Length: 401
Image (cartoon, rainbow, N blue to C red):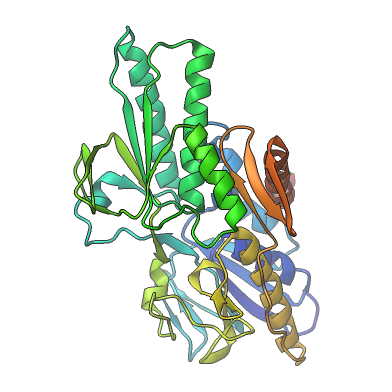
């Protein structure tokens, strides 16, 4: 650190927005940054479809936050802590162990799967995939189901029935990846038993609500080719260990279900004395500050931003854009410069639809098939390499001392 008085900056949340904020603000040696997260790793949620379908293991979709933060100069540190509340008036965050003071605070805690208590059996029998441990548990269950069918052998076997509630980006990508993986798995190994029923339950009239019409059409065509059944304008209203009941009264057999039908802010947000919207997300101004406190910013999936009156979809790309502008505005606050209003829009959409196939729209240009798939993989690898470089640097510092 230099002789100049340091700026104490706390970032809560080791997701896409939180890590990019740390990267940007660490460039100023007078910024003393603490990153907090209840988990010791960053989970690359955009790669979850590959994890579940065995193209990646958990090490390839996670980054150690201890070594990541050690990979900077001496002005960044990580604490594995659960934040219980924040004392905004006295500028302190509260953990079960102690309190930490800040000059500037960035809340980037993200969102979680919303298990609605109004749906009987949902929490007991459905799996969310926004948390790494839940995705890992589902991956193992999926693998065991495939193995059990192989073990049945012979000319007769019962099908695996997979229900995916929610036809947003996560639900569609996971359905397509599981279907294509299973087809390849059975064909490559010449198994007789090849029965896999994947049903996507969609509350709307089309999948991928709010997305570009051509991307939706191409995605629907691909799901059909993979023999995935989509039931539109229906909702899940109840679960048992073996069945799912839909809003029209239909009862579907179920080996397991992924619930991708709704999200809510992470638990900490509910404890904070801040202005929130009707869905409990933190309200921010055009600079990402919370209304009550100029030194407090909220970015990523725990807040909702708008462009031309329309909510901007909460993607990893949007979260990183928010982090970059948030970092710039904190720097401007420190330097007593004017803040910059956001004008964030999605720079593109990449939808993985099975092994070797994707559809995308980047900067107004459409791609589909293997080319789109390669573009998505390149984007994911560039992101992972950047984090891996920092983490490797931190690891060397540990073992070289």
